[in-house]
Image 1 (cartoon, helix red, strand yellow):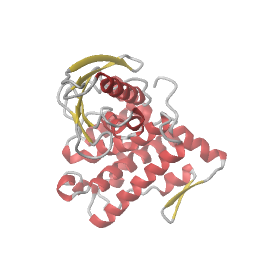
Image 2 (cartoon, rainbow, N blue to C red):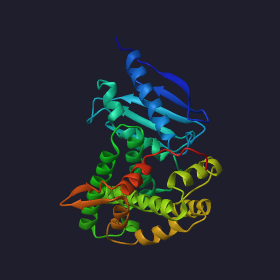
Image 3 (tube, rainbow, N blue to C red):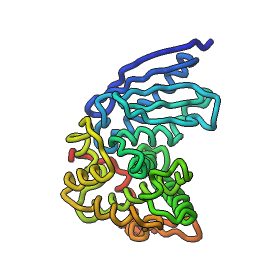
Image 4 (cartoon, helix red, strand yellow):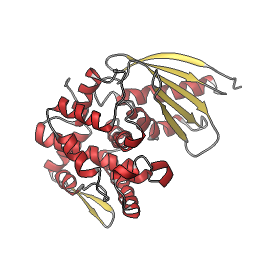
Length: 300
């Protein structure tokens, strides 16, 4: 029989033992709590594949059961007040495998890699989370590398269609995302920006977006200050000793079209034909694709 439960558990995660504080609300049985706790631990450990550690000293996670919505995690929201964390609304009737396969936790946890840049720059935050939700699913083996890239491409196609309908720049639509319903344009334009920068870092500087984020987490993530996309971009460029983040920002922020990905796809041996993604099987392309889904093996 279920009982109203309020449980708080400190969980050490990642290489630097960053804790989660998990609070269960509502009617959740002990077995349901165990199932959800394992899912959250696993998701947080997967996030550590970006930088080698969990990005916060402490994250407060709230879990509330709901019968509304669809799927194991109908919705969730990031909490940016101190301590930062995430509030998940879950349907506990789903089996553990459904939670493991769901993308929501990895998307929401990826938000914690950086501070919130503000509503005007929500494209930056949602873009990073949308990009990493797919990379991390591939890295953790939830899906294959090919399926993760197919999922990314499907998102980019949704963003392209929305961009074509809206005919307005990312700078205009990001602060108006909720009012205009421009979620696909904003989320996936941001993801395309980060994929472009990630590939440029790998090609030109032999580092990756993972590297830059690891350096940022070490130096700056715990700072109590206001951030914008431009201040984050300036910091990232300084940490990478490059101008790539700013260069690509200038290329995409005022363009009414969806960010160009042809050169990225060519480098990865990807080609879209009639809306379907094709993979060049040549070893050089396969190695580049695999490298996106390989967790860093050394400290930055």
